[in-house]
Length: 107
Image (cartoon, rainbow, N blue to C red):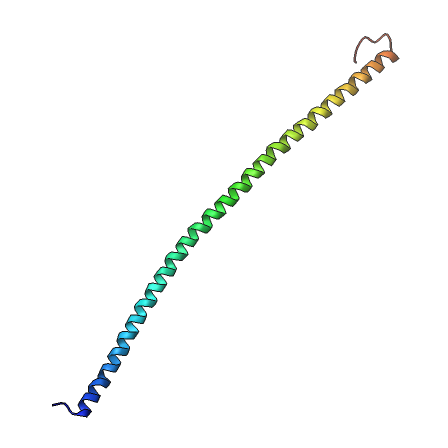
């Protein structure tokens, strides 16, 4: 037969087992939380990289459009300057012809 001391001793032996079991369960829950956090971090990593790629791609597209527009502007300026210089040269040759009527063309 069990005496009250035996029963109390038995329950005191269960207490460390319950604490150990609770600690085990807490560790398993913590491990699960860490694994979920790790998965979330991986998902966040892929999302952030995708956003960076998208943003940089848009900026590059804008820069390329701006580059083409600037090239066109430079070509236009070059063309206008070239035409202006050709007109000035023709005027100077014309004046040269008036100054020297015997000259039939540019020297």
